[in-house]
Image 1 (spheres, protein in one colour):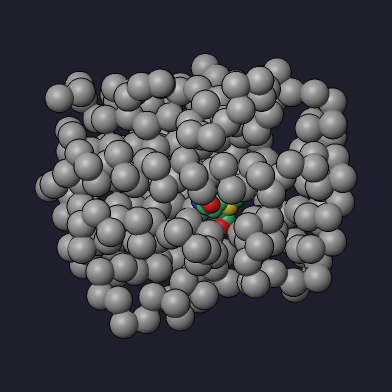
Image 2 (image 1 turned 60 degrees about the vertical axis):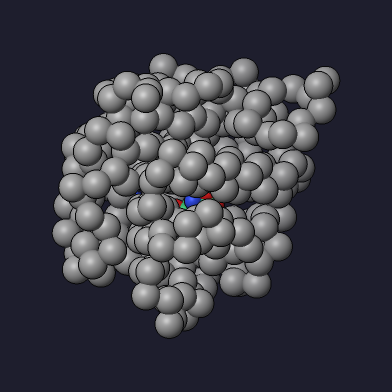
Length: 258
Ligand SMILES: C[S@@+](CC[C@H](N)C(=O)[O-])C[C@H]1O[C@@H](n2cnc3c(N)ncnc32)[C@H](O)[C@@H]1O
């Protein structure tokens, strides 16, 4: 409770109730550098929900959401269940508070599990009984990696983690990624990143479009491709800066599009 957590600061941006004074202090300071951080968090959730709808409409009925965070309105299981009441979801997070709150909220729902796991060690959760009880790797899966890979430093090999994860997925599976970038960013946004990294035990590594595109190797991107997050928003004003959320987002299908 004395150091900020990415999960709880994100929860604060999303008007959630699962955050402590230290999270609110660091969030408030970060907002001074980049005032639209709460809008960014909401935009990521819009993209996440859109990804689930796209995947569910393509017939996906099992999802793995890595770096799922704290339970917030409009979760993956709620969106998926609206389209397919039989959908199954495994939420993975390394933050014990996020996992504990998720378990409390999901109690009694046998189609959803919250699993403790680290994206840097996919083997540590892919075969966890709580996950394999729900996810059948012989059938297509929707894998969600939203706002999580930028918490993995280069020397922890994020490409290796993604490769291990997607190796387990059969063709026809889907992958959605949202990832922060310093491409085309003004000084205040970079200062916000530097501030976060000076305060947090979970520093971020922002990447280029090419770096992030490489995570989709073996996948065919659906329209509009790997683009600025703002381009996925249905209500984005025509004159808004597409780079304003400092991130790229994309959805791909393993193999070719059918
Ligand atoms: C910014 S929040 C994003 C939450 C959610 N995916 C969303 O898009 O709203 C980042 C989440 O990733 C989790 N996280 C960070 N590093 C992680 C890692 N190495 N493995 C698993 N989860 C991680 C944090 O605990 C936090 O819950």
